[in-house]
Image (cartoon, rainbow, N blue to C red; front, side, top):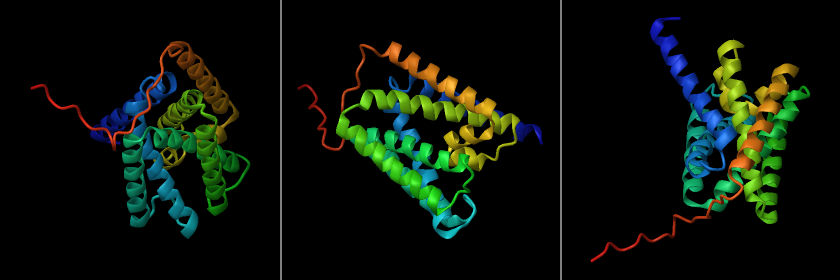
Length: 222
């Protein structure tokens, strides 16, 4: 590995770790800033995995999966920026998808249509349930802590465990759940600590819902 590639690798890893720590411990407070970023990467992974599941190709092995992933990611990022209820549905849906697909792969299934379908259905169930039960704050806290902890563990496995970057992009929670019992325990403890920290620091703080599509900017003073 050349010096330039090592430097680039470390820069990307540090940025990813920073993003993971912010999500884990400050996900609710910085939700409005984090969600478009997470929406893009979740949409990118979901779109690419859909191509993988339907056509049986490897993850990001052809131009179609890259294009579909980028388009879906861009749509998710834009919608989560414009509409609060979609942002909440996306974070809940991404958690449901990560858990569903992650558990299927943890018990021995390879990534394919069945794994993708289980994750997709569970993601829809999570999204609908959160909006119907009006438990957005708790779900945002739990989801950002779990997903952020997956990013942290996945990044360390990428740096020191030889994890291919494609797996980290596809589903960091699945990586954390199936790597080893030790890493799974570290992941769960990190996520639990993140939930506690977020709850303690946001007891009297509430995100206001938004709809930037219909918001009209105030007229400048005369």
